Length: 457
Length: 105
Image (tube, rainbow over all chains, first blue to last red; front, top):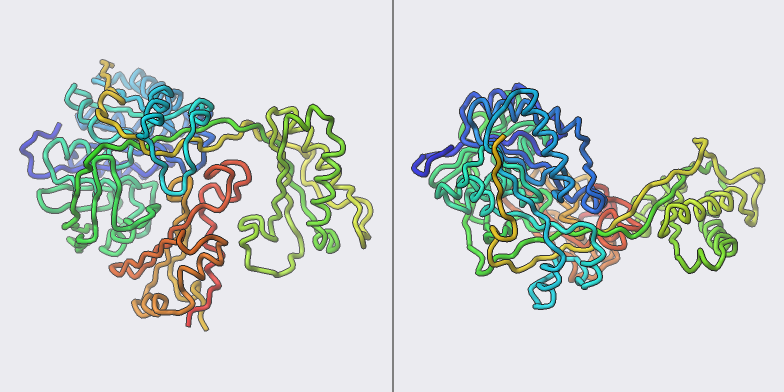
Protein backbone atom coordinates (compact mmCIF):
# COMPACT_ATOMS: atom_id res chain seq x y z
CA UNK A 1 0.00 0.00 0.00
CA UNK A 2 1.21 3.48 -0.85
CA UNK A 3 2.23 5.46 2.21
CA UNK A 4 1.18 9.04 2.71
CA UNK A 5 4.60 10.54 1.87
CA UNK A 6 5.06 8.98 -1.54
CA UNK A 7 6.05 11.29 -4.46
CA UNK A 8 3.92 9.54 -7.03
CA UNK A 9 1.21 6.92 -7.24
CA UNK A 10 1.14 4.57 -10.18
CA UNK A 11 -2.20 3.01 -11.07
CA UNK A 12 -3.02 0.36 -13.66
CA UNK A 13 -6.48 0.37 -15.23
CA UNK A 14 -6.96 -3.24 -16.32
CA UNK A 15 -9.59 -2.34 -18.91
CA UNK A 16 -12.73 -0.30 -19.49
CA UNK A 17 -15.16 -3.08 -18.62
CA UNK A 18 -14.46 -6.25 -16.68
CA UNK A 19 -15.38 -9.12 -18.96
CA UNK A 20 -14.66 -7.41 -22.28
CA UNK A 21 -11.09 -8.82 -22.32
CA UNK A 22 -7.63 -7.21 -22.36
CA UNK A 23 -4.09 -7.94 -23.56
CA UNK A 24 -2.37 -10.19 -21.03
CA UNK A 25 1.06 -8.75 -21.99
CA UNK A 26 -0.22 -5.29 -21.11
CA UNK A 27 -1.30 -6.50 -17.67
CA UNK A 28 2.11 -8.12 -17.11
CA UNK A 29 3.87 -4.92 -18.18
CA UNK A 30 1.69 -3.04 -15.70
CA UNK A 31 2.47 -5.38 -12.82
CA UNK A 32 6.19 -5.20 -13.66
CA UNK A 33 6.34 -1.47 -12.93
CA UNK A 34 5.10 -2.16 -9.38
CA UNK A 35 1.93 -0.06 -9.33
CA UNK A 36 0.40 1.12 -6.05
CA UNK A 37 -3.09 0.16 -7.25
CA UNK A 38 -4.85 -1.85 -9.93
CA UNK A 39 -8.44 -1.11 -10.78
CA UNK A 40 -11.26 -2.03 -13.06
CA UNK A 41 -14.68 -0.60 -13.79
CA UNK A 42 -17.23 -3.37 -14.16
CA UNK A 43 -20.48 -1.55 -14.83
CA UNK A 44 -22.51 1.02 -16.68
CA UNK A 45 -26.09 2.15 -17.28
CA UNK A 46 -25.41 2.11 -21.04
CA UNK A 47 -27.05 -1.24 -21.80
CA UNK A 48 -30.30 0.00 -20.25
CA UNK A 49 -32.34 -0.63 -17.10
CA UNK A 50 -32.76 -4.41 -17.43
CA UNK A 51 -29.52 -5.31 -15.62
CA UNK A 52 -30.24 -3.16 -12.58
CA UNK A 53 -33.91 -4.09 -12.57
CA UNK A 54 -33.41 -7.85 -12.85
CA UNK A 55 -30.09 -8.13 -11.02
CA UNK A 56 -28.63 -10.04 -13.97
CA UNK A 57 -25.24 -9.14 -15.45
CA UNK A 58 -24.70 -8.27 -19.13
CA UNK A 59 -21.27 -9.87 -18.83
CA UNK A 60 -21.48 -13.58 -18.08
CA UNK A 61 -19.82 -15.17 -15.04
CA UNK A 62 -17.39 -17.01 -17.36
CA UNK A 63 -16.25 -13.69 -18.86
CA UNK A 64 -15.77 -12.16 -15.40
CA UNK A 65 -13.76 -15.23 -14.38
CA UNK A 66 -11.56 -15.08 -17.49
CA UNK A 67 -10.73 -11.37 -17.00
CA UNK A 68 -10.51 -11.40 -13.24
CA UNK A 69 -8.27 -14.41 -12.69
CA UNK A 70 -4.92 -13.13 -14.08
CA UNK A 71 -5.52 -9.66 -12.63
CA UNK A 72 -6.54 -10.87 -9.16
CA UNK A 73 -3.75 -13.44 -8.96
CA UNK A 74 -1.20 -10.88 -10.20
CA UNK A 75 -2.40 -8.26 -7.73
CA UNK A 76 -2.52 -10.49 -4.65
CA UNK A 77 0.81 -12.31 -5.32
CA UNK A 78 2.56 -8.96 -5.87
CA UNK A 79 0.77 -7.27 -2.94
CA UNK A 80 -0.85 -4.63 -5.13
CA UNK A 81 -4.23 -3.35 -3.87
CA UNK A 82 -6.96 -4.17 -6.40
CA UNK A 83 -10.34 -2.46 -6.75
CA UNK A 84 -13.39 -3.43 -8.78
CA UNK A 85 -16.21 -0.89 -8.93
CA UNK A 86 -19.79 -1.32 -10.18
CA UNK A 87 -19.38 -5.08 -9.77
CA UNK A 88 -21.65 -7.34 -11.79
CA UNK A 89 -22.64 -4.50 -14.11
CA UNK A 90 -25.38 -2.68 -12.20
CA UNK A 91 -23.87 -2.92 -8.72
CA UNK A 92 -27.04 -4.09 -6.95
CA UNK A 93 -26.87 -6.92 -4.41
CA UNK A 94 -27.30 -9.84 -6.88
CA UNK A 95 -24.74 -8.22 -9.24
CA UNK A 96 -22.15 -7.88 -6.46
CA UNK A 97 -22.87 -11.40 -5.19
CA UNK A 98 -22.14 -12.81 -8.66
CA UNK A 99 -18.74 -11.10 -8.69
CA UNK A 100 -17.98 -12.26 -5.12
CA UNK A 101 -18.76 -15.85 -6.15
CA UNK A 102 -16.20 -15.59 -8.96
CA UNK A 103 -13.62 -14.01 -6.60
CA UNK A 104 -14.08 -16.82 -4.05
CA UNK A 105 -13.80 -19.46 -6.78
CA UNK A 106 -10.48 -18.00 -7.99
CA UNK A 107 -9.16 -17.71 -4.42
CA UNK A 108 -9.94 -21.36 -3.78
CA UNK A 109 -8.34 -22.54 -7.03
CA UNK A 110 -5.22 -20.43 -6.54
CA UNK A 111 -5.00 -20.66 -2.74
CA UNK A 112 -5.09 -16.86 -2.36
CA UNK A 113 -5.43 -15.25 1.06
CA UNK A 114 -6.04 -11.57 1.74
CA UNK A 115 -8.35 -9.06 3.37
CA UNK A 116 -11.36 -8.50 1.14
CA UNK A 117 -13.33 -5.26 1.41
CA UNK A 118 -16.94 -5.26 0.23
CA UNK A 119 -18.94 -2.05 -0.23
CA UNK A 120 -22.64 -2.42 -0.99
CA UNK A 121 -24.40 0.34 -2.92
CA UNK A 122 -28.03 -0.68 -2.39
CA UNK A 123 -30.09 2.20 -1.00
CA UNK A 124 -33.13 1.40 1.10
CA UNK A 125 -36.44 2.63 -0.41
CA UNK A 126 -37.50 4.27 2.87
CA UNK A 127 -34.31 6.34 2.85
CA UNK A 128 -35.15 7.61 -0.64
CA UNK A 129 -38.82 8.26 0.26
CA UNK A 130 -37.78 10.28 3.33
CA UNK A 131 -35.31 12.30 1.25
CA UNK A 132 -38.04 12.95 -1.36
CA UNK A 133 -40.46 14.14 1.35
CA UNK A 134 -37.81 16.49 2.74
CA UNK A 135 -37.15 17.95 -0.71
CA UNK A 136 -33.60 16.54 -0.81
CA UNK A 137 -33.92 14.89 -4.23
CA UNK A 138 -33.39 16.54 -7.61
CA UNK A 139 -33.58 15.02 -11.10
CA UNK A 140 -30.52 14.63 -13.30
CA UNK A 141 -30.78 16.68 -16.53
CA UNK A 142 -33.52 15.26 -18.75
CA UNK A 143 -34.91 12.91 -16.08
CA UNK A 144 -38.58 13.23 -15.10
CA UNK A 145 -39.68 14.04 -11.54
CA UNK A 146 -39.52 11.34 -8.88
CA UNK A 147 -42.61 10.13 -7.02
CA UNK A 148 -43.20 7.88 -4.05
CA UNK A 149 -44.85 5.32 -6.38
CA UNK A 150 -41.78 5.15 -8.64
CA UNK A 151 -39.57 4.49 -5.63
CA UNK A 152 -41.90 1.80 -4.31
CA UNK A 153 -42.19 0.10 -7.73
CA UNK A 154 -38.40 -0.09 -8.18
CA UNK A 155 -36.90 -3.56 -7.89
CA UNK A 156 -33.45 -2.17 -7.06
CA UNK A 157 -32.14 1.28 -6.18
CA UNK A 158 -28.41 1.87 -5.95
CA UNK A 159 -26.32 4.95 -5.26
CA UNK A 160 -23.01 5.76 -6.91
CA UNK A 161 -20.29 5.30 -4.31
CA UNK A 162 -17.76 8.13 -4.12
CA UNK A 163 -14.20 8.03 -2.77
CA UNK A 164 -14.88 8.05 1.02
CA UNK A 165 -16.19 4.48 1.40
CA UNK A 166 -13.21 3.17 -0.60
CA UNK A 167 -10.87 5.08 1.71
CA UNK A 168 -12.70 3.53 4.69
CA UNK A 169 -12.07 0.06 3.20
CA UNK A 170 -8.35 0.84 2.76
CA UNK A 171 -8.17 2.13 6.33
CA UNK A 172 -9.64 -1.17 7.52
CA UNK A 173 -6.80 -2.96 5.74
CA UNK A 174 -8.62 -4.19 2.64
CA UNK A 175 -6.20 -5.43 -0.06
CA UNK A 176 -8.94 -6.17 -2.58
CA UNK A 177 -12.14 -4.14 -2.73
CA UNK A 178 -15.30 -5.31 -4.52
CA UNK A 179 -17.82 -2.48 -4.62
CA UNK A 180 -21.35 -2.02 -5.87
CA UNK A 181 -22.36 0.81 -8.19
CA UNK A 182 -19.56 3.37 -8.11
CA UNK A 183 -18.66 6.67 -9.61
CA UNK A 184 -16.24 5.55 -12.31
CA UNK A 185 -13.66 7.94 -10.89
CA UNK A 186 -13.84 6.70 -7.28
CA UNK A 187 -12.28 3.35 -8.27
CA UNK A 188 -9.00 5.06 -9.14
CA UNK A 189 -9.26 8.30 -7.16
CA UNK A 190 -9.78 7.04 -3.60
CA UNK A 191 -6.21 5.89 -2.93
CA UNK A 192 -4.38 9.01 -4.23
CA UNK A 193 -6.90 11.35 -2.55
CA UNK A 194 -6.35 9.44 0.70
CA UNK A 195 -2.61 9.96 0.22
CA UNK A 196 -3.14 13.72 -0.14
CA UNK A 197 -2.78 14.29 -3.89
CA UNK A 198 -4.65 17.15 -5.56
CA UNK A 199 -8.29 16.04 -6.04
CA UNK A 200 -8.69 17.98 -9.33
CA UNK A 201 -5.76 16.18 -10.94
CA UNK A 202 -6.66 12.86 -9.36
CA UNK A 203 -10.30 12.94 -10.49
CA UNK A 204 -9.38 14.12 -13.99
CA UNK A 205 -6.87 11.27 -14.31
CA UNK A 206 -9.41 8.80 -12.94
CA UNK A 207 -12.02 9.94 -15.45
CA UNK A 208 -9.55 9.14 -18.25
CA UNK A 209 -8.56 5.80 -16.70
CA UNK A 210 -12.05 4.39 -16.27
CA UNK A 211 -12.22 3.51 -19.98
CA UNK A 212 -8.94 1.57 -20.09
CA UNK A 213 -6.92 2.50 -23.18
CA UNK A 214 -9.89 4.20 -24.89
CA UNK A 215 -7.88 7.47 -24.82
CA UNK A 216 -5.01 5.89 -26.80
CA UNK A 217 -4.27 5.52 -30.51
CA UNK A 218 -5.35 2.98 -31.67
CA UNK A 219 -8.11 3.29 -29.09
CA UNK A 220 -9.01 0.22 -27.04
CA UNK A 221 -11.41 0.06 -24.12
CA UNK A 222 -10.24 -3.55 -23.81
CA UNK A 223 -6.60 -2.86 -22.95
CA UNK A 224 -4.60 -1.55 -19.98
CA UNK A 225 -3.64 2.04 -19.18
CA UNK A 226 -1.08 3.33 -16.68
CA UNK A 227 -1.79 6.52 -14.77
CA UNK A 228 0.88 8.21 -12.64
CA UNK A 229 -0.19 10.99 -10.32
CA UNK A 230 2.39 13.45 -8.93
CA UNK A 231 2.21 16.67 -6.94
CA UNK A 232 1.37 19.06 -9.79
CA UNK A 233 0.60 16.88 -12.82
CA UNK A 234 -0.31 13.38 -13.95
CA UNK A 235 0.83 11.12 -16.77
CA UNK A 236 -1.13 8.56 -18.76
CA UNK A 237 0.41 5.88 -20.94
CA UNK A 238 -1.00 2.78 -22.65
CA UNK A 239 0.66 -0.42 -21.48
CA UNK A 240 0.66 -2.04 -24.92
CA UNK A 241 3.84 -1.09 -26.84
CA UNK A 242 1.97 -0.46 -30.10
CA UNK A 243 -0.39 2.14 -28.60
CA UNK A 244 0.40 5.76 -27.85
CA UNK A 245 -1.33 8.65 -26.13
CA UNK A 246 -1.19 12.11 -27.72
CA UNK A 247 -2.31 15.42 -26.19
CA UNK A 248 -5.21 15.44 -28.65
CA UNK A 249 -6.28 11.84 -27.98
CA UNK A 250 -6.29 12.42 -24.22
CA UNK A 251 -7.98 15.83 -24.39
CA UNK A 252 -10.59 14.50 -26.80
CA UNK A 253 -11.33 11.55 -24.54
CA UNK A 254 -12.43 13.99 -21.82
CA UNK A 255 -15.48 14.66 -24.04
CA UNK A 256 -16.49 11.03 -24.21
CA UNK A 257 -19.94 10.23 -22.78
CA UNK A 258 -19.96 13.57 -20.92
CA UNK A 259 -22.70 16.12 -21.37
CA UNK A 260 -20.15 18.89 -20.75
CA UNK A 261 -16.49 18.46 -21.76
CA UNK A 262 -15.12 21.07 -19.34
CA UNK A 263 -16.78 20.27 -16.04
CA UNK A 264 -16.82 16.85 -14.41
CA UNK A 265 -19.49 16.56 -11.72
CA UNK A 266 -18.38 14.24 -8.94
CA UNK A 267 -19.94 13.75 -5.49
CA UNK A 268 -16.90 15.41 -3.91
CA UNK A 269 -17.16 18.49 -6.13
CA UNK A 270 -16.64 19.84 -9.63
CA UNK A 271 -13.48 19.29 -11.65
CA UNK A 272 -12.84 22.16 -14.05
CA UNK A 273 -10.57 21.15 -16.92
CA UNK A 274 -10.71 24.46 -18.81
CA UNK A 275 -7.26 25.34 -17.49
CA UNK A 276 -5.75 21.93 -18.25
CA UNK A 277 -2.57 21.61 -20.33
CA UNK A 278 -1.88 18.45 -22.29
CA UNK A 279 1.74 17.84 -23.40
CA UNK A 280 3.57 14.91 -24.98
CA UNK A 281 5.97 13.62 -22.29
CA UNK A 282 7.57 10.78 -24.27
CA UNK A 283 6.65 8.53 -27.19
CA UNK A 284 3.66 7.00 -25.42
CA UNK A 285 2.90 9.30 -22.49
CA UNK A 286 0.93 12.50 -22.07
CA UNK A 287 1.44 14.88 -19.15
CA UNK A 288 -1.62 16.77 -17.88
CA UNK A 289 -1.59 19.69 -15.46
CA UNK A 290 -3.85 22.58 -14.49
CA UNK A 291 -7.17 20.78 -13.84
CA UNK A 292 -8.74 22.44 -10.83
CA UNK A 293 -11.23 21.38 -8.18
CA UNK A 294 -14.06 23.10 -6.38
CA UNK A 295 -15.39 21.09 -3.43
CA UNK A 296 -19.15 20.74 -3.19
CA UNK A 297 -20.87 22.66 -0.38
CA UNK A 298 -23.15 19.64 0.20
CA UNK A 299 -22.59 16.04 -0.79
CA UNK A 300 -24.97 14.73 -3.48
CA UNK A 301 -25.10 11.06 -4.43
CA UNK A 302 -26.50 9.91 -7.75
CA UNK A 303 -29.24 7.30 -7.40
CA UNK A 304 -30.21 4.81 -10.09
CA UNK A 305 -33.36 2.72 -9.89
CA UNK A 306 -35.20 0.40 -12.25
CA UNK A 307 -38.71 -1.03 -12.16
CA UNK A 308 -40.48 -3.70 -14.18
CA UNK A 309 -43.06 -2.26 -16.55
CA UNK A 310 -44.15 -5.44 -18.35
CA UNK A 311 -43.12 -8.39 -20.49
CA UNK A 312 -42.08 -8.37 -24.13
CA UNK A 313 -42.82 -10.66 -27.08
CA UNK A 314 -41.55 -9.91 -30.59
CA UNK A 315 -41.19 -11.19 -34.11
CA UNK A 316 -38.96 -10.20 -37.02
CA UNK A 317 -39.95 -10.43 -40.67
CA UNK A 318 -39.04 -8.89 -44.00
CA UNK A 319 -41.12 -7.18 -46.67
CA UNK A 320 -39.88 -7.18 -50.28
CA UNK A 321 -43.09 -6.47 -52.14
CA UNK A 322 -43.19 -2.84 -53.36
CA UNK A 323 -46.88 -2.42 -52.58
CA UNK A 324 -46.46 -3.70 -49.03
CA UNK A 325 -43.57 -1.26 -48.50
CA UNK A 326 -45.67 1.62 -49.84
CA UNK A 327 -48.53 0.73 -47.47
CA UNK A 328 -46.73 0.07 -44.17
CA UNK A 329 -48.67 2.86 -42.40
CA UNK A 330 -51.99 1.61 -43.75
CA UNK A 331 -51.25 -1.98 -42.71
CA UNK A 332 -50.04 -0.89 -39.24
CA UNK A 333 -53.31 0.98 -38.59
CA UNK A 334 -55.37 -1.99 -39.75
CA UNK A 335 -53.36 -4.39 -37.58
CA UNK A 336 -53.83 -2.19 -34.50
CA UNK A 337 -57.59 -2.21 -35.11
CA UNK A 338 -57.71 -5.97 -35.74
CA UNK A 339 -55.83 -6.71 -32.51
CA UNK A 340 -58.17 -4.46 -30.49
CA UNK A 341 -61.21 -6.14 -32.06
CA UNK A 342 -59.95 -9.62 -31.27
CA UNK A 343 -58.99 -9.09 -27.64
CA UNK A 344 -61.55 -9.71 -24.90
CA UNK A 345 -62.47 -7.06 -22.32
CA UNK A 346 -60.19 -8.52 -19.67
CA UNK A 347 -57.15 -8.30 -21.92
CA UNK A 348 -58.07 -4.76 -22.91
CA UNK A 349 -58.38 -3.81 -19.23
CA UNK A 350 -54.95 -5.29 -18.48
CA UNK A 351 -53.51 -3.08 -21.22
CA UNK A 352 -50.80 -3.62 -23.80
CA UNK A 353 -48.64 -1.71 -26.24
CA UNK A 354 -47.86 -2.68 -29.83
CA UNK A 355 -44.78 -1.16 -31.48
CA UNK A 356 -43.61 -1.46 -35.08
CA UNK A 357 -40.08 -0.64 -36.23
CA UNK A 358 -39.19 -0.58 -39.92
CA UNK A 359 -35.48 -1.25 -40.49
CA UNK A 360 -34.33 0.01 -43.85
CA UNK A 361 -36.91 2.80 -43.67
CA UNK A 362 -36.60 4.56 -40.28
CA UNK A 363 -36.03 1.83 -37.69
CA UNK A 364 -33.24 3.75 -35.91
CA UNK A 365 -34.42 7.35 -36.19
CA UNK A 366 -38.20 7.07 -36.44
CA UNK A 367 -39.78 10.44 -37.23
CA UNK A 368 -36.31 12.07 -37.16
CA UNK A 369 -35.16 10.18 -40.28
CA UNK A 370 -34.36 12.76 -42.96
CA UNK A 371 -33.93 10.27 -45.83
CA UNK A 372 -36.87 9.71 -48.18
CA UNK A 373 -35.17 7.12 -50.39
CA UNK A 374 -37.59 4.25 -51.14
CA UNK A 375 -36.05 1.01 -49.80
CA UNK A 376 -36.05 -2.22 -51.87
CA UNK A 377 -36.86 -4.23 -48.76
CA UNK A 378 -37.75 -3.45 -45.16
CA UNK A 379 -37.09 -5.38 -41.95
CA UNK A 380 -40.15 -5.30 -39.71
CA UNK A 381 -39.91 -5.75 -35.96
CA UNK A 382 -43.27 -6.20 -34.27
CA UNK A 383 -43.18 -5.93 -30.49
CA UNK A 384 -45.92 -6.41 -27.90
CA UNK A 385 -45.51 -5.31 -24.28
CA UNK A 386 -48.13 -6.36 -21.71
CA UNK A 387 -48.29 -6.98 -17.95
CA UNK A 388 -47.72 -10.74 -18.38
CA UNK A 389 -45.70 -12.93 -20.76
CA UNK A 390 -48.83 -14.76 -21.84
CA UNK A 391 -50.75 -11.61 -22.77
CA UNK A 392 -47.71 -10.19 -24.61
CA UNK A 393 -47.41 -13.43 -26.60
CA UNK A 394 -51.13 -13.46 -27.33
CA UNK A 395 -51.16 -9.84 -28.55
CA UNK A 396 -48.09 -10.50 -30.69
CA UNK A 397 -49.66 -13.61 -32.19
CA UNK A 398 -52.76 -11.65 -33.20
CA UNK A 399 -50.64 -8.83 -34.63
CA UNK A 400 -48.34 -11.16 -36.56
CA UNK A 401 -51.16 -13.07 -38.29
CA UNK A 402 -53.06 -9.83 -39.02
CA UNK A 403 -49.95 -8.28 -40.55
CA UNK A 404 -49.25 -11.32 -42.70
CA UNK A 405 -52.72 -11.41 -44.22
CA UNK A 406 -53.78 -7.76 -44.01
CA UNK A 407 -55.59 -6.63 -47.18
CA UNK A 408 -54.97 -3.12 -48.54
CA UNK A 409 -55.79 -1.09 -51.66
CA UNK A 410 -53.68 -2.16 -54.64
CA UNK A 411 -52.43 -5.42 -53.07
CA UNK A 412 -51.13 -7.87 -55.70
CA UNK A 413 -49.13 -10.36 -53.59
CA UNK A 414 -52.25 -11.79 -51.98
CA UNK A 415 -50.58 -14.85 -50.40
CA UNK A 416 -48.81 -12.93 -47.60
CA UNK A 417 -47.23 -9.57 -46.71
CA UNK A 418 -44.24 -10.86 -44.74
CA UNK A 419 -41.20 -13.12 -45.16
CA UNK A 420 -40.42 -14.84 -41.84
CA UNK A 421 -36.86 -16.07 -41.42
CA UNK A 422 -37.65 -18.40 -38.51
CA UNK A 423 -40.01 -21.10 -37.35
CA UNK A 424 -41.18 -20.54 -34.67
CA UNK A 425 -41.65 -16.93 -35.64
CA UNK A 426 -42.44 -15.45 -32.21
CA UNK A 427 -39.98 -14.83 -29.37
CA UNK A 428 -40.42 -14.07 -25.68
CA UNK A 429 -38.22 -11.11 -24.72
CA UNK A 430 -38.66 -11.42 -20.96
CA UNK A 431 -39.23 -8.58 -18.54
CA UNK A 432 -39.09 -4.95 -19.61
CA UNK A 433 -37.80 -2.30 -17.19
CA UNK A 434 -37.40 1.45 -17.16
CA UNK A 435 -35.21 3.90 -15.22
CA UNK A 436 -37.58 4.80 -12.41
CA UNK A 437 -34.88 6.75 -10.55
CA UNK A 438 -32.02 8.82 -11.95
CA UNK A 439 -31.71 11.53 -9.36
CA UNK A 440 -29.33 13.22 -6.95
CA UNK A 441 -29.92 12.79 -3.23
CA UNK A 442 -28.41 14.97 -0.50
CA UNK A 443 -26.30 12.79 1.76
CA UNK A 444 -24.53 13.82 4.96
CA UNK A 445 -22.36 10.77 5.56
CA UNK A 446 -21.37 8.61 2.61
CA UNK A 447 -19.79 6.02 4.88
CA UNK A 448 -23.10 5.49 6.68
CA UNK A 449 -24.92 5.02 3.36
CA UNK A 450 -22.27 2.71 1.89
CA UNK A 451 -20.53 1.02 4.85
CA UNK A 452 -17.35 -0.87 3.97
CA UNK A 453 -16.97 -4.35 5.44
CA UNK A 454 -13.79 -6.37 5.55
CA UNK A 455 -13.43 -10.14 5.72
CA UNK A 456 -10.41 -12.42 5.61
CA UNK A 457 -10.15 -14.82 2.69
CA UNK B 1 -21.50 22.72 -50.49
CA UNK B 2 -19.85 20.19 -48.12
CA UNK B 3 -21.90 18.48 -45.42
CA UNK B 4 -21.02 18.23 -41.75
CA UNK B 5 -20.30 14.56 -42.42
CA UNK B 6 -17.79 15.54 -45.15
CA UNK B 7 -15.94 18.03 -42.94
CA UNK B 8 -15.80 16.00 -39.71
CA UNK B 9 -13.20 13.32 -39.03
CA UNK B 10 -15.34 11.91 -36.20
CA UNK B 11 -19.09 12.34 -35.85
CA UNK B 12 -20.60 10.17 -33.12
CA UNK B 13 -23.44 10.02 -30.64
CA UNK B 14 -23.64 8.29 -27.28
CA UNK B 15 -25.70 8.28 -24.11
CA UNK B 16 -24.63 10.75 -21.46
CA UNK B 17 -26.64 8.84 -18.88
CA UNK B 18 -30.05 7.31 -19.65
CA UNK B 19 -31.81 10.64 -20.35
CA UNK B 20 -29.39 12.59 -22.54
CA UNK B 21 -27.65 12.05 -25.86
CA UNK B 22 -24.32 13.71 -26.53
CA UNK B 23 -22.98 14.16 -30.05
CA UNK B 24 -19.27 14.78 -30.68
CA UNK B 25 -18.19 16.36 -33.97
CA UNK B 26 -14.41 16.38 -34.36
CA UNK B 27 -12.35 17.95 -37.14
CA UNK B 28 -8.88 17.06 -38.37
CA UNK B 29 -8.33 20.62 -39.67
CA UNK B 30 -8.79 23.79 -37.59
CA UNK B 31 -10.25 25.62 -40.62
CA UNK B 32 -13.06 23.06 -40.93
CA UNK B 33 -13.82 23.49 -37.22
CA UNK B 34 -13.88 27.28 -37.59
CA UNK B 35 -15.90 27.11 -40.79
CA UNK B 36 -18.55 24.96 -39.11
CA UNK B 37 -18.78 27.19 -36.04
CA UNK B 38 -19.16 30.29 -38.22
CA UNK B 39 -21.68 28.72 -40.60
CA UNK B 40 -25.13 30.29 -40.46
CA UNK B 41 -26.55 26.81 -41.05
CA UNK B 42 -24.93 25.25 -38.00
CA UNK B 43 -27.03 26.68 -35.17
CA UNK B 44 -28.82 25.42 -32.06
CA UNK B 45 -32.10 26.33 -33.79
CA UNK B 46 -31.31 24.12 -36.80
CA UNK B 47 -30.23 21.23 -34.56
CA UNK B 48 -33.45 21.61 -32.52
CA UNK B 49 -35.50 21.50 -35.74
CA UNK B 50 -33.78 18.31 -36.87
CA UNK B 51 -34.36 16.57 -33.52
CA UNK B 52 -37.85 18.07 -33.06
CA UNK B 53 -37.00 19.63 -29.71
CA UNK B 54 -36.90 23.18 -28.32
CA UNK B 55 -33.86 25.32 -29.10
CA UNK B 56 -33.33 25.85 -25.36
CA UNK B 57 -32.85 22.07 -24.98
CA UNK B 58 -29.76 22.12 -27.21
CA UNK B 59 -26.38 22.63 -25.52
CA UNK B 60 -23.78 23.49 -28.17
CA UNK B 61 -20.26 23.56 -26.72
CA UNK B 62 -17.16 24.30 -28.86
CA UNK B 63 -13.93 22.68 -27.62
CA UNK B 64 -11.14 24.57 -29.44
CA UNK B 65 -8.26 22.61 -27.88
CA UNK B 66 -9.18 19.55 -29.96
CA UNK B 67 -11.14 21.20 -32.82
CA UNK B 68 -14.35 19.61 -31.67
CA UNK B 69 -17.94 20.59 -31.01
CA UNK B 70 -20.12 18.86 -28.46
CA UNK B 71 -23.90 18.88 -28.79
CA UNK B 72 -25.97 17.58 -25.88
CA UNK B 73 -29.72 17.04 -26.27
CA UNK B 74 -32.48 15.18 -24.43
CA UNK B 75 -32.92 11.53 -25.41
CA UNK B 76 -35.72 11.27 -27.94
CA UNK B 77 -36.69 7.61 -27.54
CA UNK B 78 -38.05 5.46 -24.73
CA UNK B 79 -40.98 5.95 -22.33
CA UNK B 80 -38.59 6.59 -19.41
CA UNK B 81 -34.93 6.62 -20.34
CA UNK B 82 -32.75 4.31 -22.42
CA UNK B 83 -33.92 0.73 -22.86
CA UNK B 84 -37.49 1.49 -21.76
CA UNK B 85 -40.62 0.94 -23.84
CA UNK B 86 -40.42 2.33 -27.38
CA UNK B 87 -36.66 2.90 -27.38
CA UNK B 88 -34.85 2.61 -30.71
CA UNK B 89 -31.22 2.97 -29.65
CA UNK B 90 -30.34 1.81 -26.14
CA UNK B 91 -26.71 3.04 -26.23
CA UNK B 92 -27.60 6.12 -28.28
CA UNK B 93 -24.77 5.27 -30.69
CA UNK B 94 -26.67 5.97 -33.94
CA UNK B 95 -28.43 9.24 -33.15
CA UNK B 96 -26.05 11.54 -35.05
CA UNK B 97 -27.84 10.66 -38.33
CA UNK B 98 -29.98 13.83 -38.63
CA UNK B 99 -26.82 16.02 -38.60
CA UNK B 100 -24.58 14.17 -41.06
CA UNK B 101 -26.10 15.67 -44.21
CA UNK B 102 -26.38 19.19 -42.83
CA UNK B 103 -24.76 21.48 -45.43
CA UNK B 104 -22.11 23.86 -44.12
CA UNK B 105 -21.57 27.15 -45.99
